Image 1 (cartoon, one colour):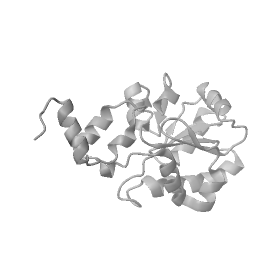
Image 2 (cartoon, helix red, strand yellow; image 1 turned 135 degrees about the horizontal axis):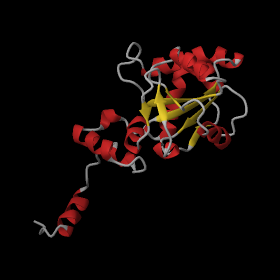
Image 3 (cartoon, helix red, strand yellow; image 1 turned 90 degrees about the vertical axis):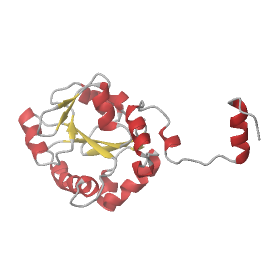
Image 4 (cartoon, rainbow, N blue to C red; image 1 turned 180 degrees about the vertical axis):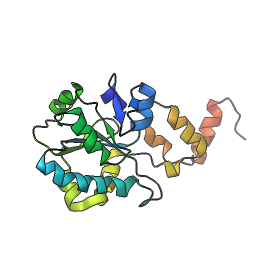
Length: 206
């Protein structure tokens, strides 16, 4: 997913911290479902949808609702007319949201890439950048947080509950394009596979 933002800058909500290096983007985005929210604080349809999206995000990521945050990240791509309008809107939204900086031409690139002509739009992406849902606004309205389960399965995320500590450390150092699924479960080898492995290693069979 970080490849989508290579050479770009994202900002943290309200804290104005920039997330720009490849490593920072990898840590922020890897092994997560990414929501790109195209909207505006001045659009009447967006004003109706924004509280729904806020509640949706909080119920999946806030410790008040869940013991462990879901593997979900949201990037706000605004159509606000001024930086002050964008900042004011973001201040009313969850702190964990990221945003494309106001005035960044990359926003237009994203609109063209995902065919966004009107707002609100929520594009749901796999960690590899493939589209899961082109616009999930209606799904979020109708189903609520329950729809994340389907996205999670489609994204083939590694559930960190299945990882040992050393596996998690290794995962944090791996490229976002590496095959995460092989880390999900440890499969016991058959006796034949074990015997073959000993021969390949130069050990004599008993």
